[in-house]
Length: 384
Image 1: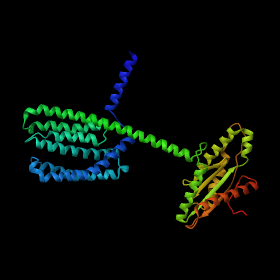
Image 2: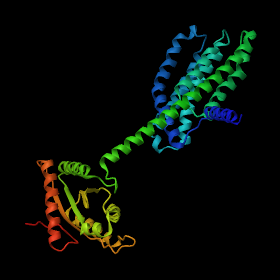
Image 3: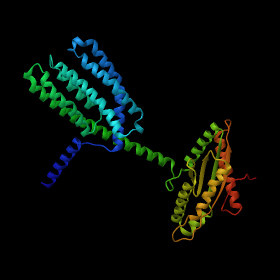
Image 4: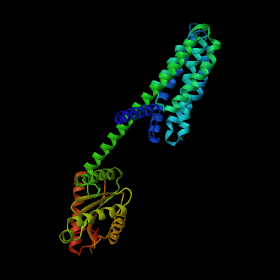
């Protein structure tokens, strides 16, 4: 009995969630973007449709005045919609919502006007009914907003139409048709909204998974830095950009002094912790445009676009000084680094692959020279 009651409550909960479906701010923004885009496309077509009604006046029961009124309103409202679509990133949510709903009410108003005008000689309630159903199909509207729009369209219609109806005997039928279609269109709008929310959530999940997979493909899992392959690729791209601008590019290649001794004395877990702390310190020390990679083992690489030898030395000094703050609990480890700095002055004739190979090779030579000269230093001057 308890399980059955729980299942019923769950079904009621799902049904209420469907009826009152809402969305977070990012989702609403996305739906406003979609609605605005559709309205920008629909606007000119809507205007042409209105114009096409004018020559058919005698066949459409004298609707000229109604069409002219909404032609003018279209000309007034559409620029607001177009502006909102073009500048929506800088507009507040209420102004975007106002643009969307003003034009939707304009569409609904034309349907209502044509229908009410037709009631003077025949029964054209279906024009209004088609309008509210079409709005539910083509626009993604939150539950409360959609309900308000329907009420703004339906209530004035129901208040006015009895005074214009020629065949009074069908008044009851028309009232019921309008109410039933309004309810069905709102429910259908909930279905459209819910489906779009689910579709958007699925799309975002896939995008997040793709970003994660892309990160896994280029990132070192221990440090979050670029891995060896990604570092080489970013270096080649940086060289290509430097060639286009004929600018400078600096490269810093360094490793941890006596890292084997740290592993042998304190174990590989401590060694891994040292690598993670160094990676974090390096990321905090470089410039915004610089890219940092774990080149292999305890070796790191820093790619510095638009950076001269003086700028590279400044970055290297920041990294070197940052090592003083690195400590590992329950150990007396002191971290020092040795590395080499290489600068490339690019030109259009430079071979990218060869330049990348040479930069790493020259930096590596300077790194070993730093080791020979006593470690705990970076070398930037050319070495024999």
